[in-house]
Length: 149
Image 1 (cartoon, rainbow, N blue to C red):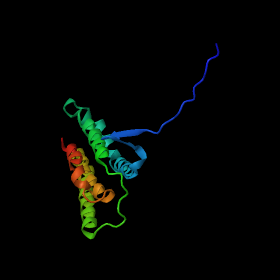
Image 2: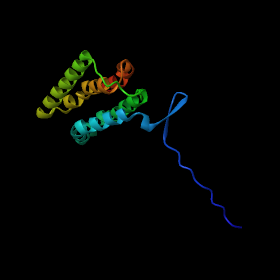
Image 3: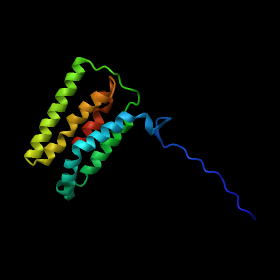
Image 4: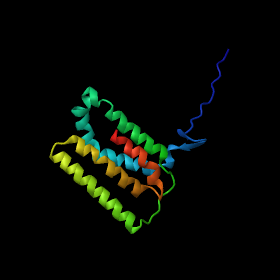
């Protein structure tokens, strides 16, 4: 009996959000945020994985970071962001990034890894304000605050 070969079809990867299926490529700004976060905090995360997070009492911290990034992805608005940023929003973004940078620099220079890692919170808040439309910060405050656990 000859064997019949069936043609295989390849479907794009989808994420289930509510009742609608959304392809991964509808949230490119999130992946820009993720790349930016890994570029900025890669050194701190590597340092924490080597020192702080190997202790039994801190073993859950990398899991919390991964869950927080996943929760941010789940609530991320895939709509294109507005090209114009209001003056107040721009000022807020600037001050949050400056505050995060100050915490990061003091944490790195002073070899205080938890302080450098904690700077991810104002960094993510500023990035949400930069990459998301109005009202998104209210939806994303829980996933960002989840990092504090």
